[in-house]
Image 1 (cartoon, rainbow, N blue to C red):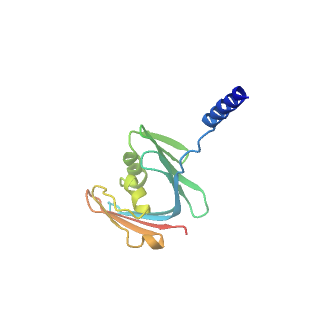
Image 2: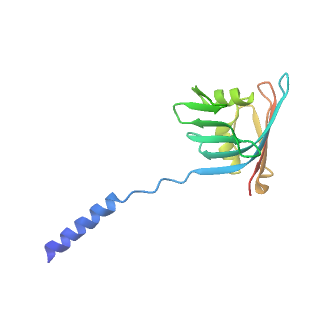
Image 3: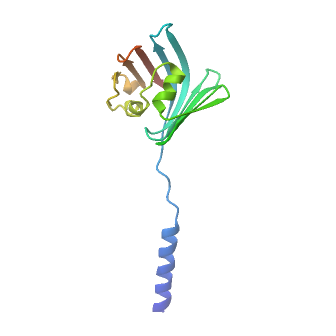
Length: 156
């Protein structure tokens, strides 16, 4: 009897060790964004977006008002990738590819904190988080030129 109990306990222990762990949840936001870049000529664009992951690994999908994919940025600690118009570009950094896409290096790492309502430093950028409770944020880049303004409205 004692032997059976010991075997049962060992079997239960092995089963518990083999149970798959659930992966940590990943952050996800969706909404609308507007970006104005005061370059020559000035650039301005609007898109719906879906952002998931974190500053180290994630994906930013930009969509037209009717849901067509405009571009997708994805990144890992080792590389970044931009898919746009049937073409795929590889890059060493997310900042490099976001600048190629939008005309300015977007502060994607800080953006994750800003969307959580946490202040975060991004060189040259100032974020206004006063509208966070209403699902809104504004960030301005003053340095380096060209100046840029990013506005985000989250889906509620």
